[in-house]
Length: 467
Image 1 (cartoon, helix red, strand yellow):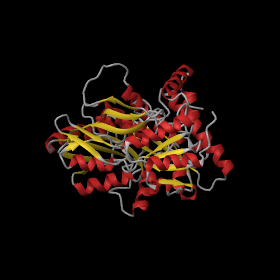
Image 2: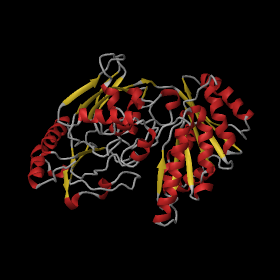
Image 3: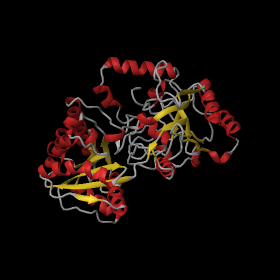
Image 4: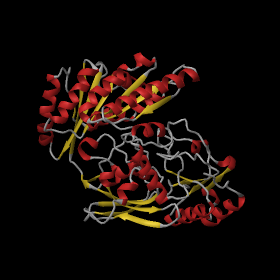
């Protein structure tokens, strides 16, 4: 595909739309952070960054870009890990972080309407002050809700509450040609034609640009208690997960972690974890409206863990302990990143019944490929995060060993009937693995959908399934 190179006339047209030079960055004024995302080594600068503040601005820019065949890349906080917000074909980058307003709290319908640049942590604080709850809980709380929706982010509470898609009721979207459309709404049920709203969720900015979201809320649970459960070995810890899932008491979250990752987090935060003596841990969270209700829920699970060899059951029943544990858990990615020179990540998801086999496979694979791998993840929903570390390897050694490790991990996930990504998306970095895992007919259908939305392929080109 041949795109128009941004010219002075194009820049001047954008200036007429925006009418605020401080919201337009070009040339040397484009900060280096706009050339990449949080992790991937995919690097490419846009020709211009436009900090949009309204749906109308997005619409006008998209209409102009569509008519002139200029590529456009939407971007939120840039916290992605697979290059989805990198401007591969340069062109225009639309930064939506200034579209960060709460538009409506509808307590009768239990919905919150927001712009895409509102941060996840801002949503949580806003609704919880009003005794309401937005359950999706990805580890990166500084991500925008637009980015969360674009990747169908999951997070730690997905075991009980589901993922982002389950809490998106409606979307306002600007299409690649500049048209403004609405998908879904405040209704709870909807069988009116194709599920266009659900198609947008997880599309990684390739089909349209989200400019407004109507989110489903639920009443805020009154009590939260976590259990930190140390096990002598990883095998015992992860082998207990399917038994917990099969029990009648389903926790809000089931996380697994190893001692080496906890030590990284301690060093990164400068604070001790409540316990770092065991080889592996399960971290469970339970919520409810009374302490008695929660205790009844976790009693059987605690007993089950002890039967499977757990060394202890550490109960986090104060806000201070709760914050200490989950703050450390939230720092794992940055802590691992700080422990090496560079890393790449694998975000596979497998059926919950196979999570123990997948975790043990990842744990032992370093023996075959001679490279360090650290992992943790959402064991309760089968979504595992494995980080391949470069350390002091040469570029040639890194490419060879990293590729071998990833090939083996993705092949194992496929063997266990899993998928390439559980919540981080495909973006630019993971396309080759997606192509290997999907039936060619499915890829053809996906490309057909992209063409229906964006026949000129100007919106976030080269992402997901586009070659």
